[in-house]
Length: 276
Image (cartoon, rainbow, N blue to C red; front, side, top):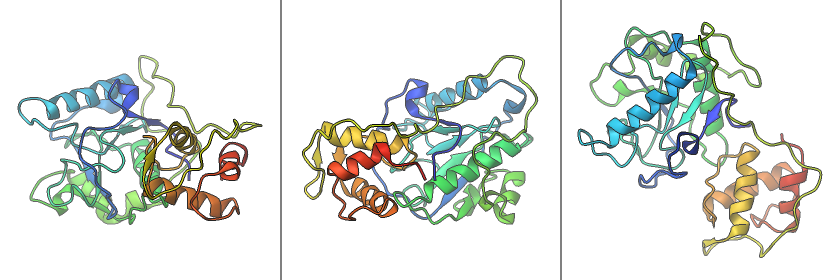
């Protein structure tokens, strides 16, 4: 499954590529959140959503909260963008009792704000992407109020949680209409996964395998290529259990020897085999 159609990474907001939050491996599902105040972002250009996301991080890391980073794993805005917060494999500060076991996503809406069809589809795409083998969440969707006594994610969104709206199949490869045309042009969508090139770069070696977990530029380049293809993988240069699982799954998909080792054949396939 490719990454969401409109995906913006932390670096797109000028933040560090990897969140400073502690590591975790959330597997139990996705938790829906909202803002306690109305934001009216559906009637504004997407640049307003980016500004909101940056303000939220500033508030969460400021003196009133003092958290290591923005509290949420992800945000889904009214225009259908999935916006990285703490991102993959990180502890959140979103729902006590589920910060290490579940990913979180906020709808960036308040009690009276519309939840748009593009926003719903963005949550569906995010959920399906996170259900890929490398992260393997269960696919269950909950609301913040399922963990503690709170109004979050609001009655409208929580009804969607309960009736299965967010667990329906996502639409991929095209925008879903939802909001009026903004008065200002919205930024171009985040880049989609790169298609395979006609020729892979020469395999630099040595082969990638673990244990032990080693860091190398070869691992970083292979991880970046797999992430560009839509795989859920952290690009940090460390070839560890997550990278090996992606490798084995990819090898099985491409009918290669399923040994979890990135050698010349697996390296070549990462560039030259079709994206499926």
